[in-house]
Amino acid sequence: MAWQTGQEVIDDARAGDAGPAEAASCQVCRKAPYKYKCPGCGVSTCSLPCSRSHKAASGCTGKKDPTEFCTLRDFTDARLLSDFFLLQKATTAKQTARKVASHQAGTWQAQGHRSPAVLRQLMEQARRRGVKLRMQPPGMTKSRCNTSCWDSNAAALMWRVHWRFPAANDTCIQDRQVCEDAVFRDVLKSHLKPQPVLSSGTVWT
Ligand SMILES: [Zn+2]
Ligand SMILES: [Zn+2]
Image (cartoon, rainbow, N blue to C red; front, top):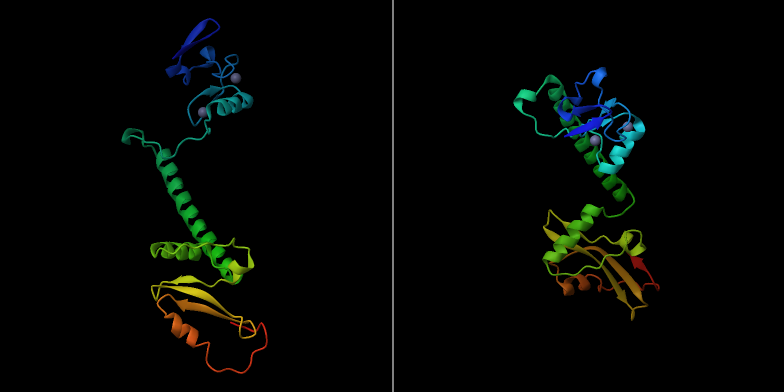
C-alpha cells in the first residue's frame, strides 16, 4: 500500500525505517508524522488519541500475539524470552486456577453446601440412570440441607430421604444417605422398630 503525505508518496514497507526527512504520516489522522507503531498490527500512529481511535475502530488489542507463528530465522533471543514469559504466565495461571477452585470447594464445604463439582456429578449420574433431578437454587434451605451425592468409592448414588409419618404424630425422620441399591422395605423397616413414643414433629438426623 502507498499513501500521499504532502509532496511525497511513501511506501508502507519502508515507512518504519524512514528517516526524519521522509517521516511517514500517521495512518489514522493522516496529518502528523507517525511516532508509534502498534505492537499488535503495525499501524503507525502519531499520538495516544490516534492510537486509541485505531484500537476502537479496528478492534485491535494493541498487543502482540505471543502465540503467533515465527520462523526459525526470526526466532531471536527476544522471541525466546517472550516464549519463556508466556509459558511462565500459563503455569502461574494454571496454579492460581487450581488454588481458587480448591479454595472455593473448601468454602462450600465449610458452609455445609455441596460444591458445584459435587452437584454436577450428582446430576450427571442421575441423568445416566434416567432420573430427572429438579435442583433448587443453592441458597434455598432445602438445597443447603440436601446431602444427596455421588459416592465414587461405592460407585453409587446416595440419596437423602425424608420420611414423614402423618399417622404417627406427623413424625419426620431423615436419612442422610441411602444407597441407590438399598431396598425400600429394608430402609423403612429400620425406622419401624418399636421406639419410645415420639413427640410431634421430632426430627432425627
Ligand atoms: Zn494521528
Ligand atoms: Zn493495532
